[in-house]
Image (cartoon, rainbow, N blue to C red; front, top):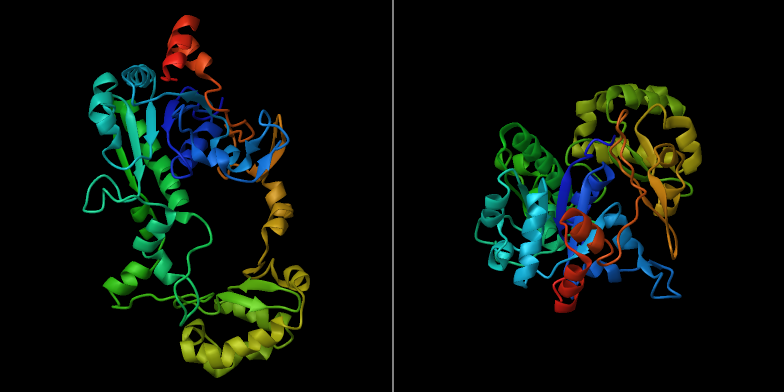
Length: 401
């Protein structure tokens, strides 16, 4: 058995903040029913890259596939009364519902938490939004960049004395999904013990703030507003990028132990005992580091290739090649961890990231396919809810599904 086998999740989400959360549940064995509007399905279905582009029957978005794998796809028009009734019937059989509308949209549609908990008191209702379910910003539309901007991360990223730089991935969407999955499972455990469901309220802004490491306490306790530091750390040194003969590496050998190993590797063990820099605290001093430590490291690293440094030091001190995505996909550690998986669609093969949660006894399976629009209407509405073929045809003709 997979760990979440027997758990039923209704997924009314689009893009990434939400689909990624329910994808984790699906990979771990939950039955995830992705609900899309028949007139306006998840628009990431139109995001490149595509496989099978030679035919509309086989064309499929790899982006969509990656975040919606292992799910069953149905269509429901929630603006129609019969559509609302269909969702309510699904809720009766569900354990969890995940949605990522702006606060109030589900209530306006007549299927908000207060209505749904009357149908299923044990329902865990996870709402992922830009700013959460309360506060002065709840009406604001939001994307990942909105969270990076208002959560503090954007202001901290980039190079010193340059404008702030957006983090190079959708960290607001991804972190909200990860906090959402954790909070949902906590609420699900509570519901199983007590019979009491609840709202899991996840804000992208909150999620980004929680990733800002020491920035909050540096301000509230130290009075310092963190600015872009480039590749440096606020106080730990050395802990940054260095140029090598043919590329770049990260080196973080700041402890006394790692510093001595490093000096010995480069043939200058006596450098570890130089009085001005012979302790970790001394090397943390910004001016001392800039004038005594960093120039020596730059001199050392410039003599070697990335491969030579990895071979000689990576098992002894924190030293890592800075790899592009091609190198990551081909990385032997990534392969050993089965973090690049293959899924075969009618239009071809898609390789995507796997499941980072490794369970020894009940592993998940990330290789399942993402659904076509409404692919499982008959299976879910017919087999699960008991609707007849004639009823399904009538609903389809009316635009309800």
